[in-house]
Image (cartoon, rainbow, N blue to C red; front, side, top):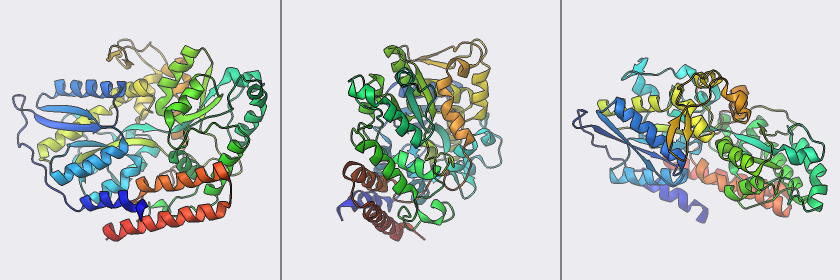
Length: 473
């Protein structure tokens, strides 16, 4: 029962909820506080604080304070404890795996319910139709907008085209087979000591979920938990999980892949930045940092869509990242202030600026269009040293920065179906170590793949059924 410990700690405190107290009138002399939790502590936090301050200047009757929390998992756990204590933030950033948690906790007001039939809130346009469809649909629950999209990402490939060019590869690999062929071609550079290996990327459950969606298959039953509440895992019933495991085994067994441990992102990025490997896969949220590292190291960087299994074709990708939720129990005036802030936070200009600051994709189509036709005095760029906004050059941002467009193209071209919507189930957060660990076990040691998959499937189903026993109607 040890594997259920984290689940039960979380579930035990979900039983109680306390109403938040908020003042009835918001004025410039006595502004209403809008505490906002996000999971960033670097220049992305600086950008968020600056943007909140811009909102506060426009709306002196509110005071948005952005607080950094360690990571996505910690936000969920800390918010749960804060609800138990009755002192919780008005706005909280929840990652994709916490969608069912947000639904089942009954601790949040859906964006659609706050907005109602209004086209603007306190002067901030709603315009949800402007959101890129695959992003919009992920956070749509029973036909209603739930969270407000902000930091959205997708996995993309990063290639050192100088190293690939040394072995005659002039175009980005598109499929798993292309990657294996490129690694075989690069092996003489490894043997000569010019490279440590062909590839390195984080061993993340997120990539397993993405490849499952690319196959058009589900992680859980009942339409990936999208048609009705998921009740069991289905990873043992589809081909995707086994195919993913074998791809990793082929990479590792041939010494093509540097493994840095489960969910260890930093060292794999460093392997690529120092040209120890030629192929890297990571979140599009790393585009700015990796682009700057490549420029500093002096090699030609090319980004491309996440590679897929050529035997199955490409069914599209799921989004990653997080969205912003408004706590329930707020007065109408505070609730409207929170929604106005989130609409401002993710409007056309701010979504474009956030994209430049981080690499997260612009969530609005209008933001992409803005970046393609920039005018002078745009104030879109984020200057990290000065922690301030400056101007981007006029013209088409993507012509000057083509590596930043890859993620938007990938998500924009992804068809909307239950696979690309992503799975939603109550133990998503706790299941990731199970199936990630199963793939790791087979990659490192081989063995009976069917037995490994079936054991992971059974553990996930047992875990989910324990959760549903407490929370299903």
